Amino acid sequence: MRKDKEKAFELRKQGKSYNAIREELGISKSTLSDWFKNIEWSKHSKVSNTKTTRSPEHIERMHKARRDQLSALYREAEDQAENSYQVFKKEPLFWAGLMAYAGEGEKRSKHYIKITSSEFYIHTIFIKFSQVYLEVKKQEIRCGLIVYPDLNASLCKEMWSNMLGLSREQFHKTQVIQGKELKKRLQYGIAMSIISSTVLKKKIMKWISLAQDERFQEAGMVQG
Image 1 (cartoon, helix red, strand yellow):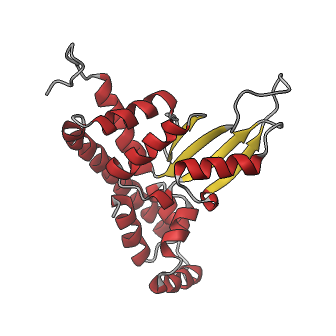
Image 2 (cartoon, one colour; image 1 turned 90 degrees about the horizontal axis):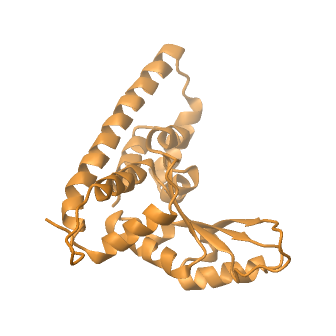
């Protein structure tokens, strides 16, 4: 189980709301809803949250505790990334996925991992990388599409769904954009693979930082 999922269950058992868990761990409410929708004790926690009234001082103490806990969680994630890098850097899939994100991934956001590309294979590599090294389940990945007006959005979604092995329900958003040309060369548009997790974003950015300082031998092998 993912570390942030374990933490989310721990916080939920403490009576924390989805908003509180999202604020602390950077996990989207839709993901939290998927995790807890069939958990009976979570439903009681939801009722309890609606009835609880706290003073401003208590709320501030809670926020401070969350910030401190969050900082510790991020430090732990980066420490784990630094340790695991020494093992993972010897594996081709790790480098393929990491370099795909270094080239095509979103770097600025703190709360989600997003890679954007019109190439099926880039997404396929990154999804496999995410499953193996980030311990993300395939059904936890969300996708969005960017298409031009001359493309059939439904057919594009079906093609991406089939090629990536993701269900159509995982495609949450399609953007139709205008361009100068009437006919576009991108047959199936551009896809975005998205993972909502601040902790995992910390890990992947730490790996990229370490990779930037890596030295390589002439034969292309990573030095130990």
